[in-house]
Length: 114
Image (cartoon, rainbow, N blue to C red; front, side):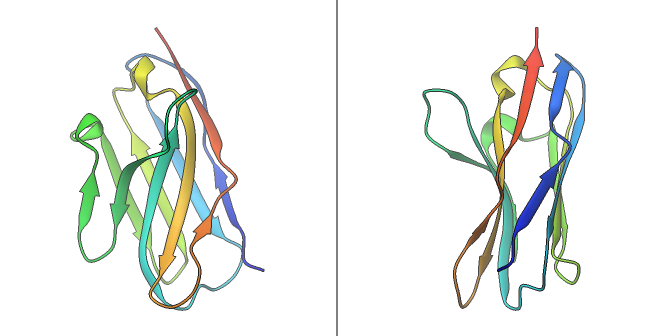
């Protein structure tokens, strides 16, 4: 069973930066897209950024966050700059396949203090 392992979360002051990483424990054969979602307390999980045939960002993070990935290595990264308190959430890595189930990471906490 392939698992996604995330790292890089933590506590940072407003205006600071963090880089999230996500690596699959095994080969995922037919990747369609890779992405990051987040869920803040009391809110629904939302897409932050995804990369596949094209790259998409939530309006709230455009110009501040950058997603990158390596299909061959089954890894995806999220560089987060100019972090704000409203970015505080649990961030989840996601890999979608053309054929087969989606994979999700266990989540990593990002906390931005004002």
